[in-house]
Length: 243
Picture 1 (cartoon, helix red, strand yellow):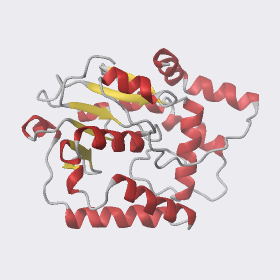
Picture 2: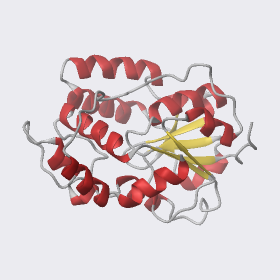
Picture 3: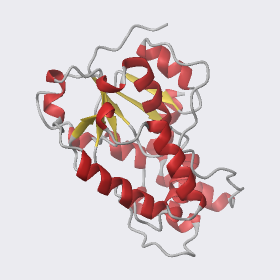
């Protein structure tokens, strides 16, 4: 077991890198009232105040995904949150909230306040092609309506994965989220137990698989793979260093 990361810490959940599963483990480990969740407006809320538990929300999401209504699901959850969540706070107030960690789709631009620059940061990386394939599946299911997606390709039903994956605005997507920040612990999605060991916490025997997205990635043309690897060279380097 590794040395525990100093609390509170900030977990950067890069989209499609097992962040929902990690949040469930964090809640189980620290308690829902001590895990803060980042909302789209960049404010934080204790997960104990969220209208739905992580696992319950995942079940609803799976139903919506199966019915082809993922965009309506996202809009509905957002509307419920806006009506129900009144006790929110900023990242700069995290140390006054008895919070163990804050998790969500943080990017390096969120760390602009001197009050939080000293807090440890953690993240999980995923093999870039696999992460992009999952991102593309979520993008298609939501018909492009994802608040955290910042790509330059306009959604159409016939947009190919190759077109999506070679969007210059998605180049080095994981590195774009992290910037030049330093991290106390970096793990990879294929070895979450090792990441938990870096945090100094005991993971559950079975880590929940939540919001898995698209699977069964096909074999791609070697020319496309070369172009993709060149476009995401920094992400590949970071991932290999963390593996």
